[in-house]
Length: 154
Image 1 (cartoon, one colour):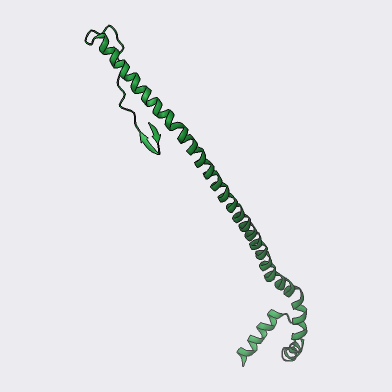
Image 2: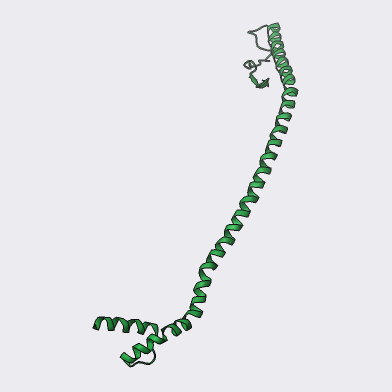
């Protein structure tokens, strides 16, 4: 099968060659004519292939060159997109760390500095509760329990 101008060209159906010269059913000249027609058919097909080959080879080279250029262009675009995506992913990681720090830093600072501040704020109330209860040292859990007990008693 050959291609001429992007059309498929099929050779004539191949015939079996009977070169048995001792065959008595056909005369020698008939067998020679048959071989000659097969050779001519083969020659026509070979010429057809040779004519179509250089044209299709040049067209194929141009088409390959065009496809390579297009592939190069698409590859460059993909490379740029990949750079942008990589930069975006990096910024998302950094932003994730910043968000975690925004949440954790106040909690850590609260655990460190809040108990002494609460103690100073609750001191006047502890004095009032100590007068009624007679207890000198209260922690926050005991304070809550005692307040709820006083409310329940009233």
